[in-house]
Amino acid sequence: MLTDKDNLLRQLHALRSEHRDLDTVIARISEQPPVDQLHMQRLKKRKLGLKDEIARLESRLIPDRTA
Image (tube, rainbow, N blue to C red; front, side, top):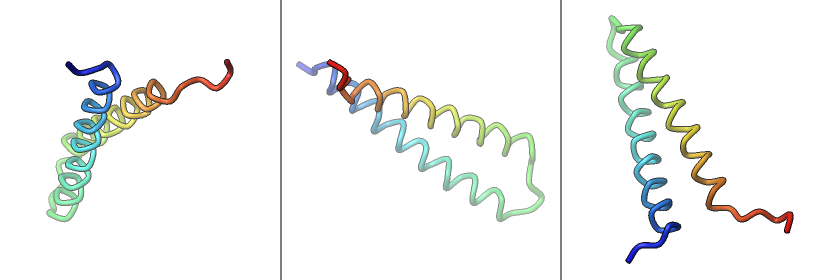
């Protein structure tokens, strides 16, 4: 049975993988003119959303030290 921490780690791994994949896609698209600016903007927005979600999950994995 998977724990909550295991589930968070699994989600974190999947998000990091998608974030890296978007890096690759964005780089390839930018190398091949003409660049579809709307598509590029959507990819970058998705990448930023993934970064925010990754940070949120990482903060849930780190215990509070105020106690």
